[in-house]
Length: 264
Image 1 (tube, rainbow, N blue to C red):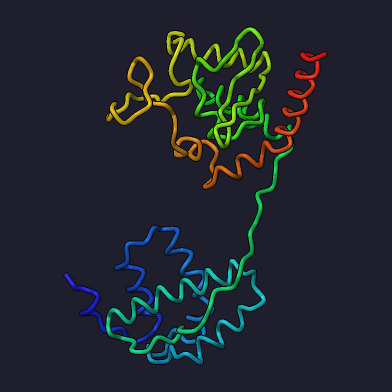
Image 2: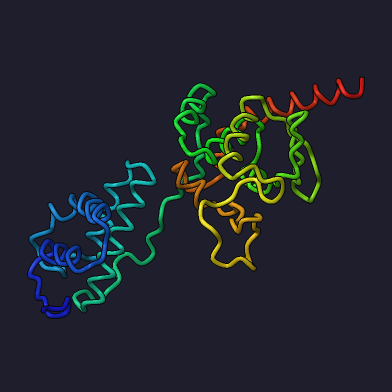
């Protein structure tokens, strides 16, 4: 079987084909690299590798200036990866991209969904635990980690309130609707109505019970971001929290109104 060092590409195009073939890229990465470097290979792909000079690359990148920063940076990353591979094979001596910087992309804030869209998504959740969890987050305006930290003992079913331990250890109360109370009841029914321990737990028993925050049956608190990301499709929980930002303010107003009634 041939190794990369035993190939003798005559052109940049053939070298690029071998680069994609021997590299352990995912299919989508191969497609992206092919698309991003297609303009360059269309221009000089039939020339020898030594044609890939700093001047040629600077000219190519100058033509990409009109692209969005993210697209420009993606094409630059594809070039860096290809050139690094060429140098590893000993086919390119110089580093023609030295000194070329990525473009600043700026911080993109996730766009908040309106209430109708959020509730449409939440209604599609089938799992009893996830349905209760995400409706509670939305209904009460909770941060994700606050919801995961709730213990069953923190819930007052008579007035539909939950005692939370917020930032800095400061306790506060949130209130949930009858609809969310019904979802929580259905979820707890699947667990045999436990009376203590973590509210939201994993579907499988913990492998390291001494290190986990367990319920009485050996299931660990749902405390990592993995399951939430898998459901939401977002890489950051902050984007989830932004989706409920408006509802959080509404929850705060409801809480203040409730407190005023208690003191009147």
